[in-house]
Image 1 (cartoon, rainbow, N blue to C red):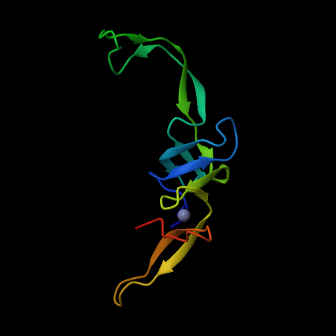
Image 2: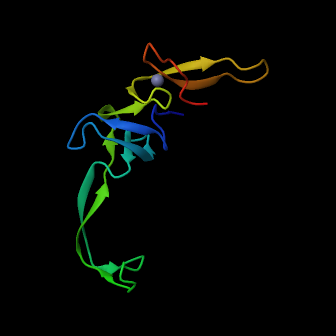
Length: 124
Ligand SMILES: [Zn+2]
């Protein structure tokens, strides 16, 4: 099975586009496309048809959501994001280390921060 170095729940730093320099939480990982969806970043406008709103408006009335344009987080290519290390809180490249587990168990692959002054495991 192919695994990505960035997973759902990670915090990533955006490297390009209009949200360059911002950070956000990964809400969806798409290993097939090598993309991730980051909460509230890389928003795109989508054209929609009118439909009932799923939740009542602030006024408390059921409203018809007008057809038009809504904003939605679009997937971002993995090459355009960097994982933010949860230990040192900086964007970093990710290494994979195989940690030996006690005999009888299979070894475990953990992601590690590649910063020389950190090198901490990202996955606990
Ligand atoms: Zn680190």
